[in-house]
Amino acid sequence: MSHDKLAYMANQIGRFFQSQKTETAVDSIEDHLRKYWDPRMRQSIMAQLAKGSIELDPPVRAAVERLQAHTDAHVMAGEGPPSKPLAEQPPQIE
Image 1 (cartoon, rainbow, N blue to C red):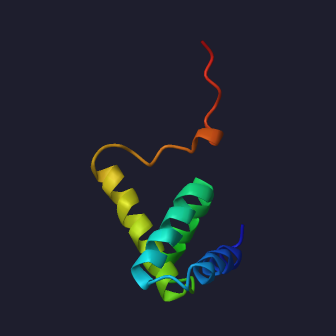
Image 2: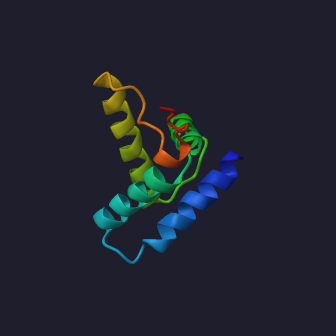
């Protein structure tokens, strides 16, 4: 997916939550990205933000930065990247 498309989608999510107080909106945006975006999409938007090659509205930027901080904390704690959502995990064979 193109980086422009990811930025557009993330900013659309941010606009949906813009009626909330800023901190609540940031929490809601981060929660949405964590729950509903494919891990590859999250990694891509975090990488593009780190490079400075993506334009995000301020609450969306804060949410993506917070998402990156949480991801980094998991890796630093030796937990590795966050696990895949249940729907993406292969079926368990017993």
